[in-house]
Image 1 (cartoon, rainbow, N blue to C red):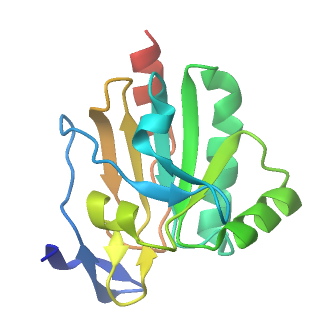
Image 2: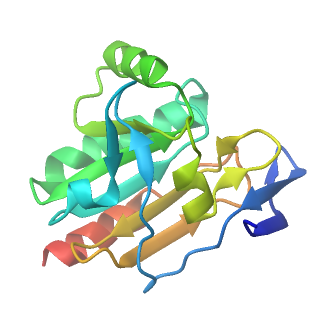
Length: 173
């Protein structure tokens, strides 16, 4: 049975139930299986040797998610080749590709959690009521240890954009 965390977060003030553990700094990043496109799946190991900034959004087609993804896409330019920025949502891969093309997003890799919700369950962001992933940001070092974790308490709020970027820069030395 997957662990549920009731009423630790809200959507426009209404309590939502999150499924999975709340990960903390120092925890080993759990594996996941996400879709890069309809046929190609990726796992955490596919990004071995990289620092991973993982931006989790409910849907790219909403204002805050759009802004969050654009912001981290801009940050990618200053972080360099040792860093990969992954945006995870439950949007279909087709919708992610369409959105990226329309928005001119080229430095962030969008990954879909639509099939198995494996990321949402493993990282404690799956919203039981909507089958979407709650907004969160993680920084995972090259050894797959979580070095930054932010779970948004209100789904419609923006994450702290500066702290995860600073965490990545600290790992770069």
